Image: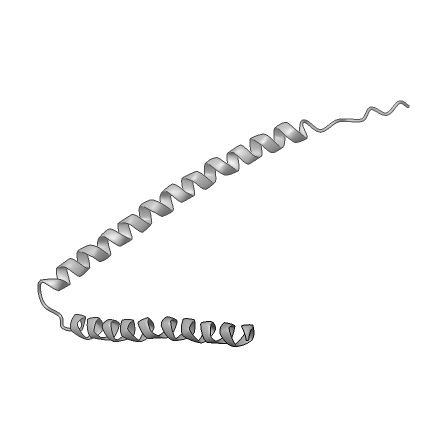
Length: 93
């Protein structure tokens, strides 16, 4: 009995999960077909959006690079502090 109820619940969940996906796919296809038309007004906007995304990516990469440099310097400092100067063993001859 419990197995039958569990199977029914799983079946309903699968149906619910698949139905919105089908509706969404149709919407995406309509949006793609409507964006295929190159209008003079949409092209500069798309170009500007692309430029903004490239600039944002470049800025993010620069900040990430600087943060990595700072982190590496901190790691070097901590490592040298923890390891300390190399101990020289004086051998008595």
